Length: 302
Image (cartoon, rainbow, N blue to C red; front, side, top):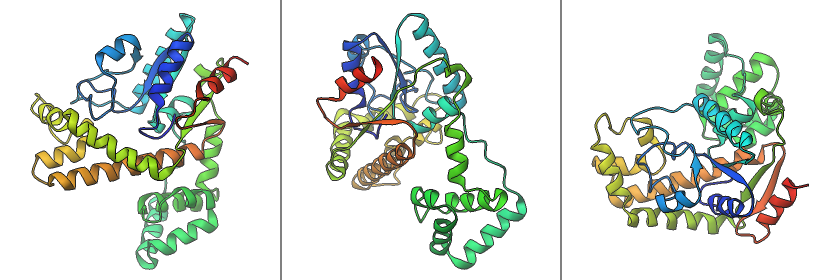
């Protein structure tokens, strides 16, 4: 696991060369056929050498839920295991990982009364005061929720007022659960962290420009011309694809598109790291470290 552009795929290739593994992609964009450049999908030559499961699963006009991923991934894990291969899950779609291992959080539904109460309070006091209030009742959630994220701030407050239990506690309890079909497995969770945040931010910009040079705009243009396709489809809401489709529809200049895509990718990477920092049992690896392969193999072979 790890943020976008951190080197997860390269490490997966090293593991494939060193151990009897089956690579299973955990990427909500690479599941789509024809979304190649913007998803960072390995090309056909690389995939022939390093086969991936759960890449090119559906057409771009179709939807793919976290529940469907869980079902498909469990099937691939069992198939790999029956073939005496070690399932190697690689990707950065944290919701997929969470739902696979623990299921989605079984949070209580808010009542209309509490929802209106929190909404009114938010309108009267402002988001800054509400975030400060959240820091008092649920410091961990407040730390993980951006002060401008009104929806998540209100939801966290609603959960606390409804149950008198912080949202972060609900989430931690849920993380302790393991899917029934995975209880017989030893699960090792490795994540790669940036060795320098600023350098990683620059890498994100360089990586997106490389995608433009490789033909990302032309790829999106071709996708939008396909039957049953338009910019409202889930595949076109993906980071990078959304901004390029907005550009092609005349809503953004080229410079605006690049800026927004890079900003959105950086925000995605930040959210991925926020998820991982709250994750139980993560074994951290260092970006570009020569020791990563040995750490993984030594841990798994103990």
